[in-house]
Length: 400
Ligand code: FDA
Image (tube, helix red, strand yellow):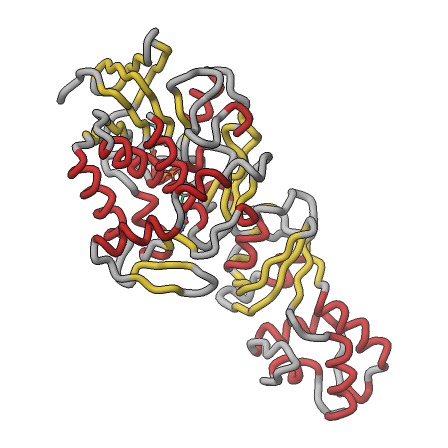
């Protein structure tokens, strides 16, 4: 193992680290990537249900959360989804758009990792696996590192160790510790894109229906997302729930709209006139362009909780009106989330305030760069987090 000097040492062989490595090495830099796991890119492999949702065609700053919502714009504009797609196409990887601009591999996320590793190999990147960094200090010039594979020096250092989600996959708070060591502020972190857990009454109401899904809209803190909600053994999951979890604050309620884009009260009153003998549960199941078309067991539960037994014709207009409003604004207080164990991403992280948005370089410690999920830039579900990893890695790769 060569323990000589490298121009650039990148810590973390994940999405951002590999993109940064191949970009810098193509420019002729001697690049070494240190990865503490025995394999690179494990999150790429498990992403998108094994098909890697590698980007999104509609990348805009609105799809990212950060204390500074403008920070991500420059890097995203300089490395767009089309730049990544060009690489994917050059490697002959077949892909498709699933929905709302989300691009997935037709076959396997392995292809994305293989592509990045092939590009790294071609550009001469050295990847050192099973190599934990135990100490790191400014070396005047550059940086000195103590690692599981001996001491190393580098003129430039890139922190690409990601966030805290899925510790089983090798996630650590390493980047936060090092950034703090060099004087950077770390925006408090929490699990995001993560299922909600339920306890108490909500648990009694819902947890015996695992596997049932329904298209809803779900809102909190002035944000709402439309998409499937999935009931699990522990609470609620599914794309709409994962999205809203990034905006949810512990102790707050969320509002579920069981029939998004439709009118609750008017629909019920209309149905009463049209079919007064029908019961509410049957109505909730019916395939009707103006109604929710719920799965049977969900309709039964929602009907029970609304507490309106008997034929619609027997129920007063006022009670139907308020049931319709409740269907549109169903308040539910999650007890928490499943946490980093299953979260797709970490919200918060190294503050962008002391980083350059052009080069991702520290203003407090020249030569130190931070990229990817380790920083306080978090994308929505749908390929945005990988696009941030590619774009920030590319920006740093051009600068180091
Ligand atoms: P990433 O986590 O990829 O890489 C960090 C690397 O650093 C890892 O290899 C890690 O082992 C290593 N490391 C950590 N600590 C270290 C240390 N102390 N020393 C050395 N190495 C260290 N996003 C998306 O856009 N589309 C998708 O389909 C999905 N799907 C998805 C599924 C699941 C289950 C998860 C958990 C996440 C996703 N994501 C996603 C999110 C996406 O995976 C994530 O945002 C990016 O991988 C972040 O890239 P980074 O390179 O910043 O971190």
